Image (cartoon, rainbow, N blue to C red; front, side, top):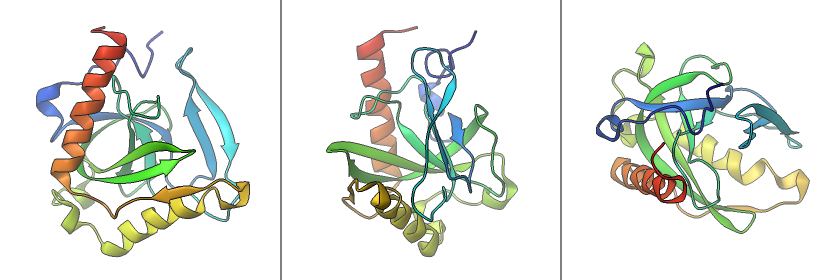
Length: 180
């Protein structure tokens, strides 16, 4: 069986234009699916308690390791919800820095490389400011009724900061797990 975190290759030369992302949660869902690290299957972590839903397709970068001990998270903008465990190739645009459960938690914002509605989008400045505000607000609100605090540290930072975060998470994976 292929493990989506460990067995999907990431070409470091393609991260700017064809970064693979494994979708966990389709846009519009209230279900919080999470990768079961041991089996590679998805498990239902919880149903969101607040009156919100995921504002974009949500997934992770294979062979990455973020500061929170999970693969690096990615929000993928596209026209349609994408089924869980689908590999989507994306162009990273920016990064949202947060603190969740007392740990740094980065969210990369990207667009689907193969969605014609986003074919022209190459930078964070080309994304609607309202869309970015909705995404930031989602993370501020989504755990409120669980009485858990999430702090959004900064507004979105741009493409270079996102690429640096991705490279750091790929290097951290290699250090933690070695080349596979």
